[in-house]
View 1: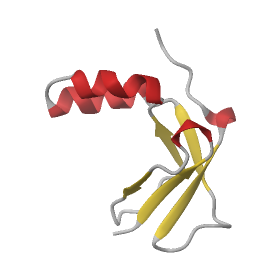
View 2: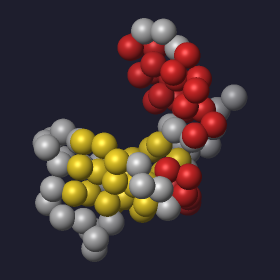
View 3: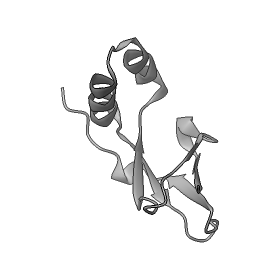
Length: 85
């Protein structure tokens, strides 16, 4: 399984295994400040829904430094989602 690693910003160095379906062009990460909210939420569906809503930090695929089995994603603040209140 391929790996995906984030570079820049507060999630610098974070990595995960991704599915073989392909890599995302843009990946949205949850700010560190909001991670505790997800940990305290009960139920997998509720956690997934909350993570999707809180994921606002954009990381864009970097083809120059990536390999077929290790995708590198660089911080792209211009693509951040605006948090809905």
